[in-house]
Image (cartoon, rainbow, N blue to C red; front, side, top):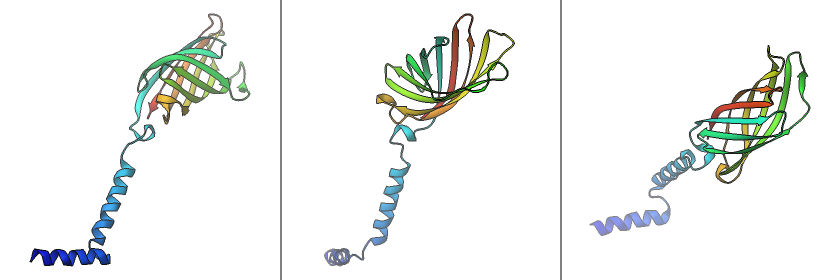
Length: 169
């Protein structure tokens, strides 16, 4: 009896009529599982990161220490992406900057809009900004993220420090 039943199933498979619904359901489930599974750096859960930079201002090179989702340290190279916008000495200046962070684990690049605002201290500026990761190499390939920054720049002491906080994935 079992042999006759299997012959009927084999005949239906050969004719393309048996299990068609199950095959389609299996393929749909397989596609959804592949689509929803986190397989690359760009699809993982966001994680907190804090990056501290320090430099002698004005300068286009700094050092950094990153903690949290990125554990690294090294040098930062800044490139100004256009002319400064704003009224210097009245309300502040906005700079669009590209920052390349070169650490022990390769490099990542940020686009960074920084606003330098005057303070009560005529020798210092307060800094506020927003950043986003636009590129990465090696261990940072596929890395994405964004956040906010704050800091100070004192032209008498020559010290500038910034803290970048946000999330990466």
